[in-house]
Length: 331
Image (cartoon, rainbow, N blue to C red; front, side, top):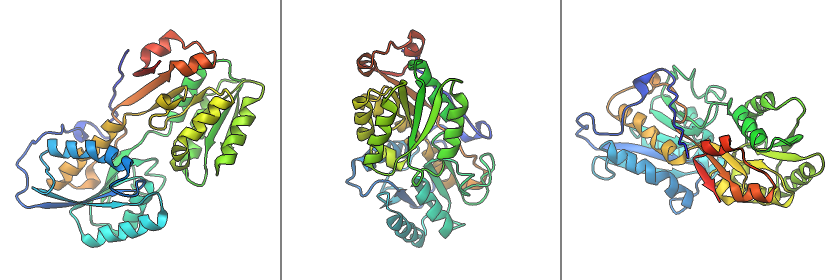
């Protein structure tokens, strides 16, 4: 298999320091708030998935918890009221820096402080939502790492049509209430659709609407499904996969683990790499740099996964050229 890695540095090579101890560490104990927006507590499996690579990268940069850095953790559990309360609590603690995952935590922090440095990750469209002035020049006290460029919707559509070229209808599934950034992803996906393919937006607010959308697409002519990854669809990943199998829908689902759980194909950022990236900026800011001069970055690695067992069940022969590009093949 060919492994594809690329780095998109917005603003030049200055953003890419290796995670090694490159200068003498500050002598005093530093204090960092860690704000995980979607996980409910430290016992949540999702918290461990984020914190394991994060802590490993911090240690590689020379920051050892309870030795030269104190980490205060807060969790939002995807609940806006809890996120607001946790943001207020963290700002009151006045740490040297706050690291936040997800758009709602970053927004809540931005509303409360313009002085404490903030590094975000797992955010889409930080310019559109007012977190930064621009990607190259964030300005203010906040910078970070986006989950993807919004043009990736076109790549998702291209891959789905490449693996299932007989599709005549493709549904794009998301919850508009929990994916305010979806329109740009949808627009780029529609622009990449071939001329004779009808593209339908499938708004889903509950489980029954997921079933209804899958049923609609499962009727003639041949239909497929492109899932926009966002809080609602991510939480219902397995249900969406089950309904896709029930109605024999070829599906591209970028949610973590989707291909191994039964989606036909997935293309998304490498999770562990994404969780390590923010440490480059956390380290630099703790050593004295200002966040307003650190450009917002995109992921440095993407993963293409294909489920051959699902392809076989759907009667799909995966093109050899596409198979050769896959980072992960599930048999």
